[in-house]
Length: 208
Image (cartoon, one colour):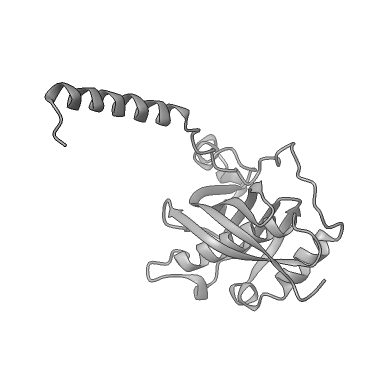
């Protein structure tokens, strides 16, 4: 069916108006989570009273995390941090942390954040993962911070941010260092190196 010029212009105006309304209603992506910032005051309620034991036991069973030298450094309902200390085995050819390391620790941090809210007798698997590598990861350690955005019956949406942390000498913690580091604790400098959105699936676990 052929449209007249007037009808075509009318449809174009309608499309532009609809698109503008859709974009205006979209919420901007949240700012990254500074590693020194307190957790959200809206702490989710875990469905398993032994959630911490489940998370710690599952993390300890991950041989790949052990291979990376990663450790579980924070756990609360819906929030988990994992830290990987720099070593020659984790570097790429230009001496940055390999992107595979960055992705692995953020995936595990988000997964365990989700698992902390799952009921007893369940486990977690990643079903979707979208990572943005923001800048080369160079530092003394990586800190991955996984946070639950929405906890569903089967699927849980999480976000994860990774920071490269460098220790600096006490006499070097000037206002310049503090400004570049985003206001973190004195004696360290942080770079936000990756952010991700992940979907986690709740599955039946053979271990209750």
